[in-house]
Image (cartoon, rainbow, N blue to C red; front, side):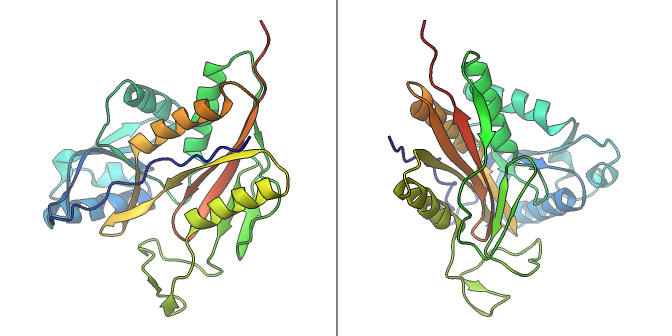
Length: 268
């Protein structure tokens, strides 16, 4: 059985020109990347490109760069630092969101973070089905991307870039590196990969795709609600039978791919 799963699309910019509206924007990490994103969000707020209730930066280092600069800037009163490891933070935050909170929230990932949303889905599956085997498996055949690398935890990292991209690149239609059209998009490539795997006889469900898109001033996000929909998609795929589900967190140019394997239900 093949199941096509796609977490809902990211929030679109209001066609009327009104600023994008967010509740909490969670920034993963308070180091060089996180502090850059905080500054850019403050600039976007001042320019009227978006509005938010707060920016919540999560880092286990109480002395991270964001902590050292928290009192400065026009949006300082809306920026909070939560000193915590990412795993317990997302267990609490996404668990609360699943109860109906965070309807306007978004998450800003770090380029160097682990595959955190996938890891949360694994933990949710183990909590939901304690009698079933829940595992991370290798993705299978290598994707057709110019650069790729398998991580020790079975996460497969992929990129269409064979060069070093700047952190503030918004992945425009005209790629600044090749000075020509960007003819690729990772969500499309992930879907094609899943279809090709099924064509080779593998019962691979999905993909679930968290598409990090640039919302304003070079800050990429995906909506918190898309993570909750992904959790529901896992239930739809694996509630009644064993399933291998392809899950990817991607931008247009880069991504991380993992497979969540859920064993068959046990007989009472």
